[in-house]
Image 1 (tube, rainbow, N blue to C red):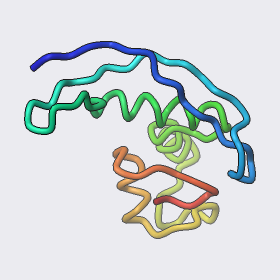
Image 2: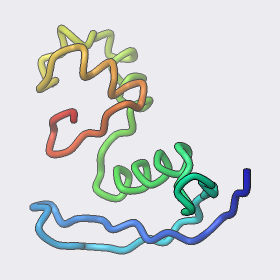
Image 3: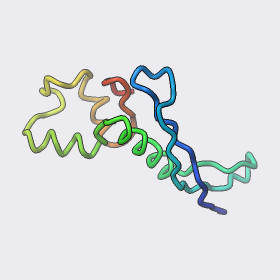
Image 4: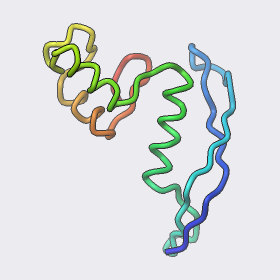
Length: 105
C-alpha cells in the first residue's frame, strides 16, 4: 500500500466551540485507498490529531486519565468526577471515544 507523510492543519476551537482559537500544523501519515481513489488518514494519524487537539485545549489524554485514577486509587464507576457511566469511560481509555465538554462521546 502506498503511504505518504503530509502536513495537516489541526483547528483548535475556542472554549465555547464557536470559533477557531489556534491552527497547529502537524505531520500525518496517509494511505492510498485503491477502491475509492483517495488518500486516507491512518488510524495513528487520527489519534495524533485528537491528541494534539486535546493537549491544546487542556484535556487529559486517555492514558493520562487512567494513570491519574490509578494513582488516586479510584475506579471508573466510583469516581465522583466522572460525568458518564463506566462503559464509555472504558472505551475512552482504550481510545475508542473522545472527550468533549466533559462528556465522553
